Image 1 (cartoon, one colour):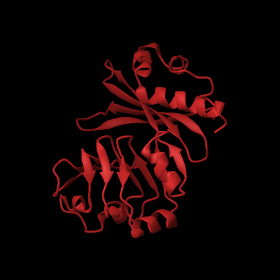
Image 2: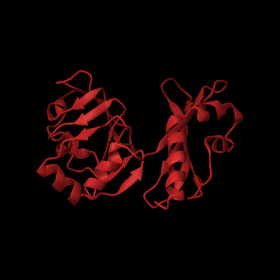
Image 3: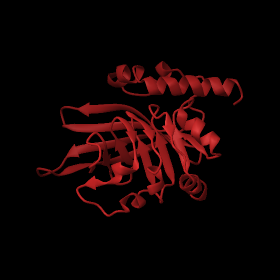
Length: 220
């Protein structure tokens, strides 16, 4: 994890195989890339997927330009503006950057305005906590670039010694048209009863199902 020297509210965190998560509140700028613990000056170039998470509202000029290896840009619905520069426009075009986010948000508008491909962001569904075995399972609805979808179960279990974790990741493919005619109640029927309340309260899931069905009905 890196912490911005410029703005103590901005942090950068990374888990292997996942996007670099830019976390905090408000706008991010080029100066935020001066971080501690000390990193190489061009450290942003190491990351191919960047996620501006909930709370980030804007990326000012020069911030995203530094991520020269960027192939995927994920924008939370709180993001309202990305300042374009000639360098960023070239980067987006040359890398064929995939934009991800929710339907009917700035992310989709940004992709359209810059003639970039758009894919709905993955939706975190619920945390399933097994108190008896001290095990946590993070359940996510994933959307893949090939048009497929799946439910991912990311399991974390205590290991045989202190500080050691077991578990693993299981991904189950689901039908491409799983959302057709599907309400959040019907979706929840496919999961254990103890997760039902969490799923019914998942606002992002509800928005996706409603919008995806509306677009299908309108032929979009």
